[in-house]
Image 1 (tube, rainbow, N blue to C red):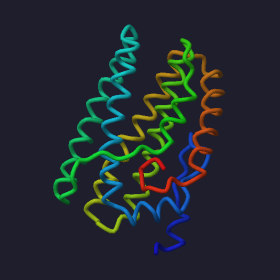
Image 2: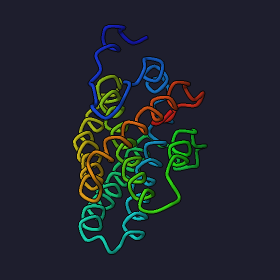
Image 3: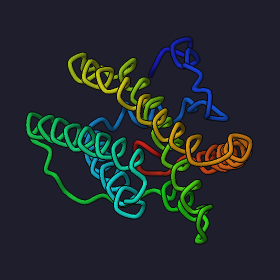
Length: 203
């Protein structure tokens, strides 16, 4: 059982409406191997998101440059997490996906240019939540070396969500960006109201 005082000491992430709740921390720490495997899947998916946006909006020079860097870094993290899986003799196998990603993606408009804005903001929210949860794993994981690894990734995740927000702000009117981010942030927090029964980074 984790110390209740420690559980309440959570870092506020500005674009997230609500912090991660204690049951997720308990679930994650009690299922560290599954969380590590899911982390591998998350890094691969994050690289895929950056690549897909880069190819979809290939005429936007700034977007392509920034997302190329994100994709490269996400793939580096994917490799690093996979090395941890090897150390712990955890097979790199499939996992079912929680509804988090699918529900957020369902909010993305199918019409341009709204589709571009929504895609950037959804990616920003996912990266922000990843930053928050890696921080919690870095604080509470009983394996100190693994906890240190989680903490080492936090700055990258924060930078990534910042880049997605900056891109949205660059290509769209700021008032529109803030209004839409507010809407999506509320939805993101509502999705996490019910804890997914299987341990995942985004559950």
